[in-house]
Length: 245
Image 1 (cartoon, rainbow, N blue to C red):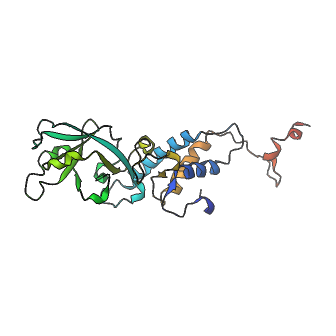
Image 2: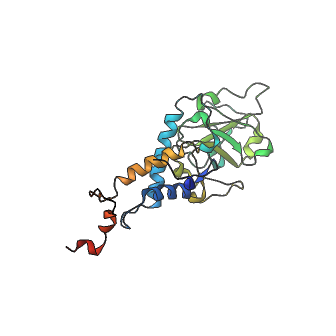
Image 3: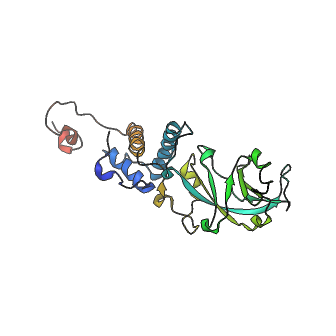
């Protein structure tokens, strides 16, 4: 199956709404009763997206296009430092909400809410964060890590980092719809999921639509036209006159 040209977005990004309409349009439903909710189509598309990205980027050395990423906004709170994390202030920062699972943590990036303020945040593993930031070249750097509690933890030898109240996290999330309530636009405001970009590169979009259509079409009743002629016998099956003999 190949998508009609008018359905393909020439940009590198499509919205959730466009992806849903692509799939429903391709289904060419034969009955009003054979309908699918937008939520079900989004759920199915999200699952196939995860599968395709895991297959396509199982080699972590591949560069992953930015169109596969999502950016979420997290609020931070000051908490007591964890055991084994010595710091001058005795405090760390922790996100108030959990971070949904990512396909690969190697692609995760952390930024201040205002990217141009100049703070550099290095995303590392929780184990590594215990031992970084103690020499004169890195003592002013801020480090972030994903804890076993799925919260973002941040630490720095520079006590000024504790004034940070918000942060952006960019990553390839396993279920893109699971971060709908955390998505933020350029001003840090939440977005409507249907009007948000569906995070998949354009090269993989036709395959995703094809997989969704194949699965959904299996649950749609399609009468078969067994007569080998040029007539539209399929259309006659729904005509009241076709039942008269």
